[in-house]
Each structure stands twice: as C-alpha cells, then as structure tokens.
Amino acid sequence: MARKKVKLALIANDSARKATFNKRKKGLIKKVSELSVLCGVSACAVVYGPYEARPIVWPSAQDAQRVLARLKSLPEMEQNKKMMNQEAFLRQRVAKLREQVKRQERENREEELKELMRRCVDGEGWGALARAGVEEVTALACMLEVKAKAVQERMEALRRGADERFGKEEKVVLGEAEAAAAVVEDLSECQ
Amino acid sequence: MARKKVKLALIANDSARKATFNKRKKGLIKKVSELSVLCGVSACAVVYGPYEARPIVWPSAQDAQRVLARLKSLPEMEQNKKMMNQEAFLRQRVAKLREQVKRQERENREEELKELMRRCVDGEGWGALARAGVEEVTALACMLEVKAKAVQERMEALRRGADERFGKEEKVVLGEAEAAAAVVEDLSECQ
DNA sequence: CCAACTATATATAAACA
DNA sequence: TTGTTTATATATAGTTG
Image (tube, rainbow over the protein chains, first blue to last red):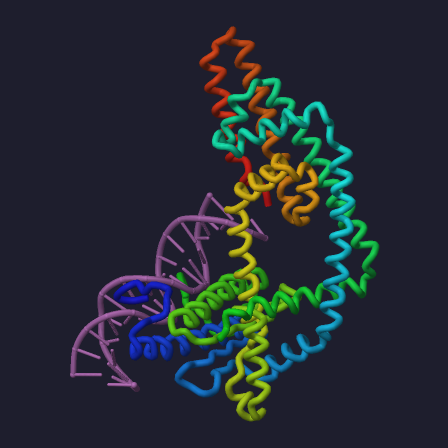
C-alpha cells in the first residue's frame, strides 16, 4: 500500500513477509479496537503468527470462550439429526414437485418447446428464439410462464409445509445449527 | 479518517454509528484476509454487531473453532492477554464468503439454466426439474419468468411495428434479433 | 533485524444523489 | 435510507541508516 501496489498473494521473500506481518498485525489490532470503541460493539481478532508460538488476541479471551461455548452448546448429534430431517423433508417435497410439474405438461406443445430449447442449447443460443416464428415464440413464452408459475407455487407450498412441520423452537434450533455450520465452514481458511 | 478526524469515542449519532460500523466492518475483514494471504498465517476476526443477531466471522467457523480450541488450551492468564474479539471477526468472514458465493452463482446462472434445459430435452424429461436441487429449480423458475416476459414484450412491440410498416421483412428480423438480446440481458434480475 | 522516513495505496467521514 | 463521490486521514511498501 505504498510505494508500490502489492499483489494479494503470499509474499515470497521471507524477511519482507515478516516485516509486513508485524506492520499489518499492528494495524489490524488498531482497526479492531477502533471499530469496537467507535461503534460500541464487541469485536475480536486472533492472529496466529508463524513467528510467534501463541496467537495475538484482542481484546479478551472471554469473548472467544463465549463463542466456543455457544458453538459447543449445539450437540453435533442434534445438529446432524435436524439437518438430515430437513433434507429428507425437502426431498419429499421435491418428489411432489416433480408430479406437479408433470401434470402441468401439455403434450402437444411439449415437443415444440423441447425443439426450441434444443436449438437454444445446441449452437444457436438465445438467437434461436428470434429466428423461430412469432407464433412459436409466443407459444413458448406462454408455456414458460405456466411452467415457471407451477414451479414457484410448488416451492412456496414447500416452504409453507416446512413452517408448519417445524415448531418455533425447533426452527430456532435449526437456525442455530445452520449458523454453527456456517461458522464452521467460514473458518476453513484459518490455518 | 476523512474530511475530518474522528475522535476515538462512541459515535453518538445513531445512523452515523451504524454507517461507520458497516464501513469499518468491511474494511476490517479486508485487512484480516489480506494479512492472512500476504503472510500465510492463520487469522480470524469476530464482530458482534448491535444490528445483527449473529456475529460476523472471518474467515470460517472451522478455523474459528480451531483457534478457540487452541486458546482454550492456553492458561487463562495468557488468554486474557492475547485474545481478540473473535466472534465479530468470524461473522464478517461469513458475510464475505456468502457474498462471493452469490456473485459466483449469478455468473453461472446462464450456464446452469442451459444445463437444466439440456437434461430436460436429453432423456430425463421434465423430471429433471424435480431431480434438480430446490434452489436450482427456484432460480430456473425466476429465469423462465423473466425470459418469458421479455419475449412477450418483444413480440408485442414486433407486432405493433409490423402493423405500421406493412411487411418489411428485414425490419421484423432485426426486431427479433433485438428480442433475443433482450432475453439474454434480462436474466440479471434473477436473485 | 529494527526504526525512521516518505511516497503511495487504502480507508473512510462527509457530502451528495 | 442506501449508494456514490470526494477530500482527507491512515496504513504501509520500499528505502535508508
């Protein structure tokens, strides 16, 4: 950020990397503390340096421990169970959706639509729509609308069913499980 | 840090504080990720916002858990010294990653649609929609609606033009080409 | 390697849209 | 209010001693 723009990649030169590390670590801590003070929020940062055995932590270990406690409070079994339940539930709904969509089919126009689609994905691209006759394209538009509506309605019904099926408490727990999962995923970049 | 130097204290004005929070949260996450990449170190940040139920975490929950586990193994005295506000850091990371995923999905939407269409016309039939994931089908529905609308609008404009200019074949063809282009463009409205 | 010193790159507070 | 733009304040890469 000075004298020259630095490419966002591991700094090859060893001493340069260390120097940058120390400078930026300091700046980062400052930023965190400023955010915390200016906005009155709880915030923390942890940096495991390759040059230090222990991580630099700001502002306190208590916050980190609280986070850990929250994550731990979600039994993994519970999480997996509920996630599986949800997945199975969704699968079931998807199966119903398939039938619904099938019912919407109108055999006569099916082949027309398929033919147009075939042209769209087979070299011609979307321009195939323009090259098709006006009536054909109009029919396609109509069919697409019908199909889209059917799919969306099915999706909504799916969501309503999910809401009924899962009680409030369960939903909260589920949300927490998701949050936990998200948290777990997002930390993957930390060494 | 601009226009005027800000005193390091809680920002009294509520909206100003919120604005600053969002700006600095973003900047902090960027700094953390840069430090991590440039120096090849593990680092994370957690920000508990007063505006969000869950903390912003960077870079991922897995790393956070590892970091937290490591911190736990440290004597408490040590912890207090080195701990940073991890939860907020982690929250930020999650938000950032989600944005990236969103952007990527948006870019790929066109291809996904074509792939789905390909499956529909290549043996699987409409059941391909059902076998696709819920999110995929929902996105498809959105795209179909947008495309259908674009096509119909173009067709109407085309007909109006045709009524005015009796059988100018060339003009009509040109209009249809425009319609094709419009259809492609309008996908940006999806999610 | 550290500290200090610029020249630039970034971040961002206010002003605007 | 949310998103841009602008003018400054900060952060920091490369340099020097």
